[in-house]
Image 1 (tube, rainbow, N blue to C red):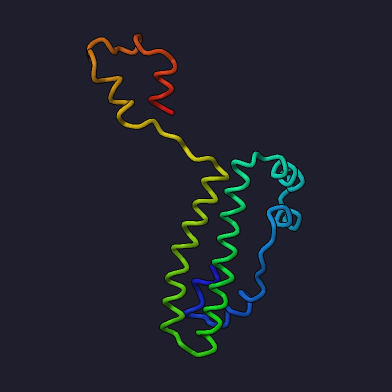
Image 2: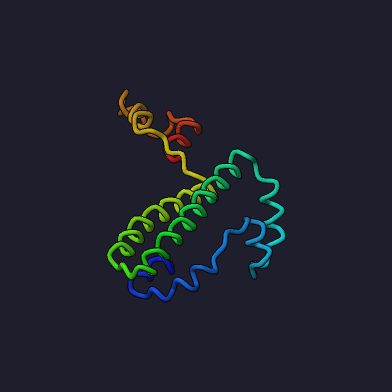
Length: 144
């Protein structure tokens, strides 16, 4: 958020310079979240299939932030507002995409049934499909 403010408030760089990457566990250790110990323990027991992509995405976020800090510091030192603006404009959508990716890993991606599977249930003998002909797994596929 501070990064987006830099073009209009270059003095924010002082606060941005103070940022440093920390681990998920350290984040919760320093938070006021009441169940922080549980969150830390749960993370340590989370399956690798979720934890590793999360950690890789966070590492990408850290790398993006650190490289952007270096770039914006150079432009602020050179008093180059145009380049500063362009750097921030490139940074923001990249960071948003990484945040969304982390969110989907944390919250679980919804696996939707492909439209072809849904259409298949209604293509044949539409008159017969009054709901009684559908078993639970078919209904689950429609709404899963």
